[in-house]
Image (cartoon, rainbow, N blue to C red; front, side, top):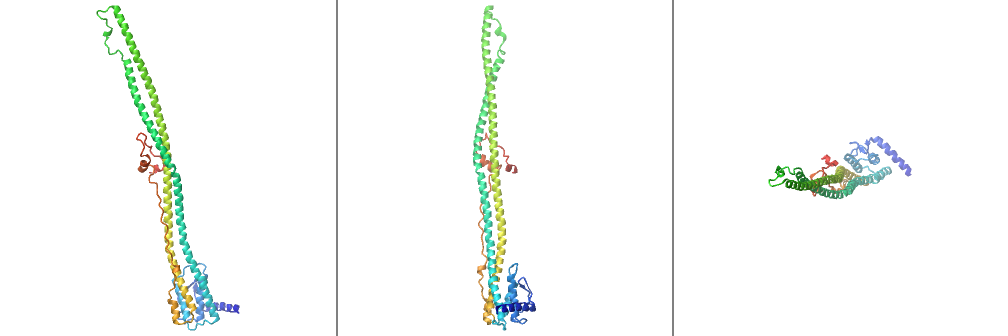
Length: 404
């Protein structure tokens, strides 16, 4: 008997829908397809059309939010059906179609509304993961920067030590040059005495005295020459010693200059490594911050768009839920009095459980870029401010310095 009734229901649905000429596409009805007074169709025909609308909505392969026009037409059809005087709930075909429609609304459409709302919530919750991904990348970038930055203090200390040693070398070189000047002065003085010895004396020294015999003259000359020979030998020895001292001092100064240059080159290499490391750290920090801000900015933009569309979609789901609830009420009160039907239409349906929840993203994390960039005054003061004037830092040749 149940199989026969089911066959009758299917036959009647097809037959009546064909004769009624209802236009349904994608869960929507054309305006004017159903008369709100029920004058153009009997109760079963109107019920069949409403069933078609509900079924089409439930079986749509691509689900979109119900339009206000669709919900208004569906509710108008249900209201018109409920107010028809010839509606007979005892008729088996009528009852079967009504039960099928109520089941579709309860088990499919209401369930779909709830599922759509959960999808909206899940979509907004997913943004938390996107924001967390930005924060995670920032944290990893900071760790890499900090790890690379650990080498910078040690290099700065090594560089400062090297420059201090260079300053000592510079002082030693200057002291050597000063000693060399003194040695050259001594050499010049001593050797000039040898070169100019006796040139300023008059020839009267060699003239014989009036009371002097020839023998006395010869003895005096021999004594004078011996004395002068001893003096000139002494002066010559002093000149040679002074010249040797100059040669030795010159060699020492050449070595001091060489030592200074070698130390300076060593310090310059350490500084080059230091500046390059600082450039790498600065570049990594800047890249990390720029990437983080771009990630947050793009995610925040998408979040704002999604928040607006989610709120609009949630409002549509609320309206659909309210309309479906009123349709259910009307189907449960077919043939009832005016008061019951008005109560169905005027009831305040609680749809607050479908209201869009405001989601606030976590605050943007602080991300600092390197303030003391190699080549800048800040960097020079911070890293090289304590260096001696005798051993200043070399010009920066690192990549980021060239870009400045």
